[in-house]
Length: 441
Ligand SMILES: Cc1ncc(COP(=O)(O)O)c(C=O)c1O
Image (cartoon, rainbow, N blue to C red; front, side, top):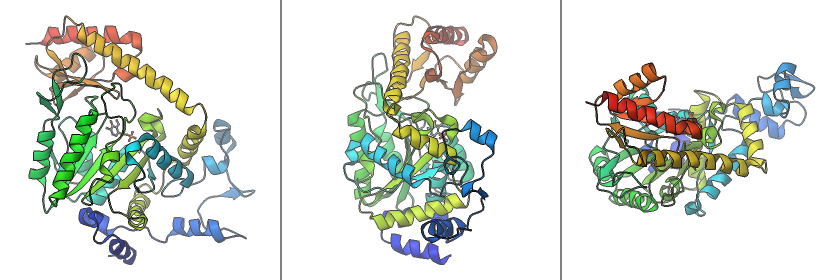
């Protein structure tokens, strides 16, 4: 093993991180290679800096004028220069400040400096590399973003263990929804039965893709309590918190913070990894900007720094660094006085669509073979098709009606109402209900 990796492992010894790192994670470190030497040179090379593989003219990175013309608001340093492996330090600082602002339950809890990755998918994949070994099992409630299977099962060879996301008979959520809520008993049981060698990994994603469900405040507390109870029993728990749709909370009873806020200081045996980013929250899907932030009770700045060094090494060895113009544009947007106001405006517009969908479903007289799964947040809602194959319903809608939806497990139909105009929702749902009636056995 590399000496630097051993030094990082020494720093982390005795913490939950050391117990949870995969073999990959244990081996990783950030070498004193070109980017690290360049960072050092930026501080101390007062005369000439001939370190990094970029081309300069007049002491600025060369930028072709057609490129400059397309990004007139950015200097060459902000548009075409490499970003540091861990991301623009100013953006990292600002994003961290945003995490505290958006999640008051964090209080003054010590968390790591967010590291920039090219989108949430890459953040999840980096976390999987660092903490999941082939043969480990990853617990994920059964309604989940399909890409998790590819990341954990196919890339990392770690089977996903699922359990029903909702429990009938749990609390109701919103008018017209069946009296279901999060299946917390199922979660507890699955974590317990899946644990191997005293550890277990869990992925949570709220607002959820595909259901559009987020826990209520009391469900969030109950979830945190059950994780704490298992941790107090000696289980080491990794919780990957996928906050892709953070902020799109439409009902008053919903917990409006990330579960990371409840987990980051919960117990010495719990390591929370927050994966978030600008993709959906800031409506910049193609920017490819995400962040990875760690939180565990008892970890010090030195521990977080050692863990970040491992993550940064993993980044250096895979994607090297993330898009510079995207980081510069996001940083400028965050500092713009219109930023919050405009976000609020688009939030209101998404909420209006959410409310319209609720009304349409409530007053429907057709499509009874479609059971509405609870939804209160995010971009989506899903039906369970009781009348046959959900994929047959999807194909019928597509081929006969020209309507695109997503089927899952041949049971569920997911509708991204976020991508519809308000006045398109009524005709869209009317066609879906008619199609379900037509196909229902
Ligand atoms: C739950 C969830 N996590 C992560 C992502 C991916 O985010 P990104 O585009 O930033 O990789 C998505 C995208 O659909 C998602 O639904």
